[in-house]
Amino acid sequence: MLVQSNEKEIRLLPALPDDWKTGTVKGICARGGFEIAMEWSNKKVNKVTVFSKNGGETTLISGDKKQIVILKKGQKTALIW
Image (cartoon, rainbow, N blue to C red; front, top):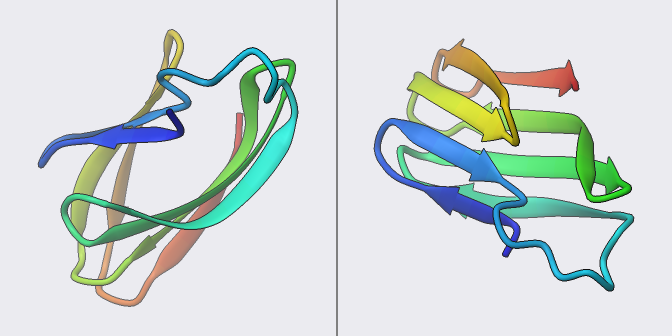
């Protein structure tokens, strides 16, 4: 519902229930050693924070938006969508 991931990409809010139009979540683990926190409203991501446990590259995808993220081990970044 909130995150779908594989070794190359992380999809944000791929199957959000209609009743969850607005919300926040933190601590979601994604493949590749990434941890996700995000805020959304009107079923669209407003802000996402990505923390890398291992270091590496992934592509964040939300709707038609894509963003490549490259982080070192222990690094995090916040993106405003």
